Image (tube, rainbow, N blue to C red):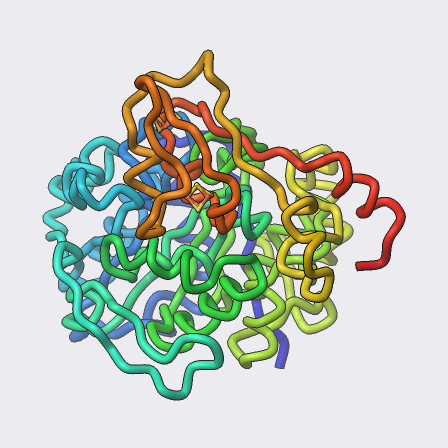
Length: 390
Ligand code: SF4
Ligand code: SF4
């Protein structure tokens, strides 16, 4: 049977429009009762990467969160919670949610915060890459998760969508430790695959009304895509996102391992794209919503695929670097580095890199609130990408 992905047009973050789009997308998949039941406790899990304004397109927009909460409540699902473990654990879950406008929506709808401020180690011996996770307690205490992900780029994984959004179920600084344990896109993709097998959100709803392109997941540029996507299959959902931005889904490690682990499919012939007007081909959907110029990494090389080039690896890695004019010296990038012996440190009030120690996890880039860290491809890597079959 094909994986269904619902796609509904939405032009503005206006409550009536977003409520309609989210409601229509879920109806196209059979309605809420296909995924959850009213006697279950349900966590709505937005992307709360950082305490940023909704207009930056860094986090799930509060209107999308509000639409899901409101529609569920109207349909008789009263036992709702919300939560996500933000990138900067020191700021706190509810403070981050407040900065993103999510807490206000939650309070208006009487949706309580689940416990994402404490963690518990969970063995996962059947994991392909990870044999345990430290999950937020809220994830363990509640029955079901509805994943409210954001359509964004990501410097390590190319995109962050439904699969990667589950990473916020991992508690606090353990996310940084995971970057250290799984330091490239390939290994990280395997770990994200395992995490999805463990937490298995029931339904994934993607906020693609205003997406983020370029230097994501925090410092990119908002760009309109005008869609709400929904699916029970996170790999299919992310793959449709990829196709809409002219990126081969099989270049995304979370898709590759999501398919290999049986979570879903990234093959378009195994995906049925449904709209309010009926079934559409991917080509028809692309002509309506696609953006071939969306700024995302499309080169087939580098990310987790350079396994056998030994001493050349450091010359080919994509390096983070500081854009000094933007840097305010806050030191968040140093806190974000997951290594015991940090590969970024403060020198005369500004950060500096120890590239020989750096594992290229890009946590520093991800957490910089000032867009002061970018990632550059070395000249040798560009030459290799053009000329070598790596
Ligand atoms: S690079 Fe960003 S996170 Fe690091 S000190 Fe500068 S502004 Fe702060
Ligand atoms: S310096 Fe940045 S990219 Fe390098 S290991 Fe630390 S957080 Fe990761």
